[in-house]
Image 1 (cartoon, rainbow, N blue to C red):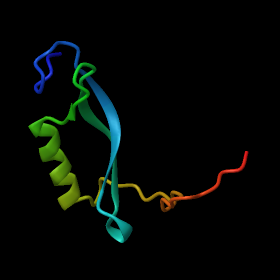
Image 2 (image 1 turned 180 degrees about the horizontal axis):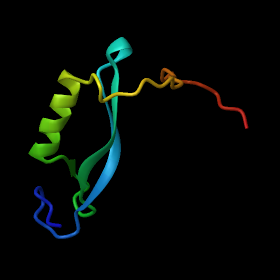
Image 3 (image 1 turned 120 degrees about the vertical axis):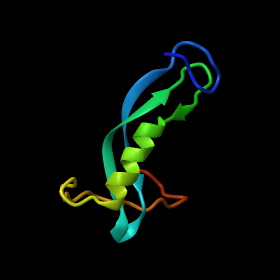
Image 4 (image 1 turned 90 degrees about the vertical axis):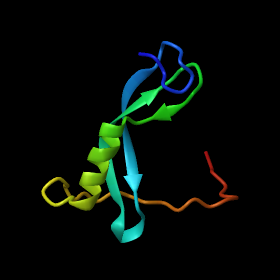
Length: 82
């Protein structure tokens, strides 16, 4: 696949997890198709993918499954013991 950013061959479609919002309005969307280029390092989504994400964000009812996940806040200077 040709990268839309650098124009070189070698871009690949990967399926990643993306999060939108925060706190009580956090929405996590799994298996989002993202184009990743090994030459320039750019990652981008097609217009069709972005449109579908906006539809999911506006009306998630019936599309989402509630799951409980652990959440940690990033803190600097945490000592990690081995």
